[in-house]
Length: 156
Image 1 (cartoon, rainbow, N blue to C red):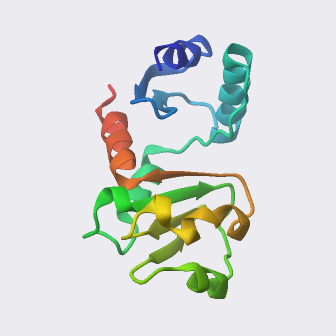
Image 2: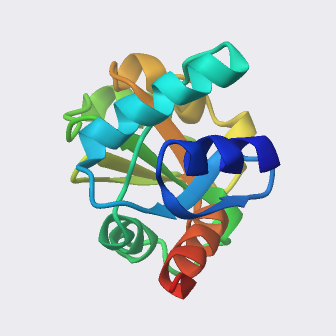
């Protein structure tokens, strides 16, 4: 992650910080998100030899993802926010067919929030999200998102 911070600083992003070994970073920039995503993907490809799908979110988008769902009393590691390029329109019947008792979800702007009380790793719904929401995506649990939000608002 130290090398990732160096890459981010090398492309002009200020106050770059990373969160554990997750590929998540916070930084300062006045560039638009779409431009930053391309810039970061290209820099990672040049340094590490792969071009990951890259999502850049504002502090406000992260805050909305952390709080904008009906699963507030759930264990944070069991609620995942799936970030997407566009607001999804999933087939509700297909979601219900895969859901286990207690599973729940909420479609939000450019995100799909999924609560899996039995665990994300054992959820057939989570496993098949790539087919149900066919677009580039990345998922983070609420614990990670809360930590990233705290890092972002603590920046000078």
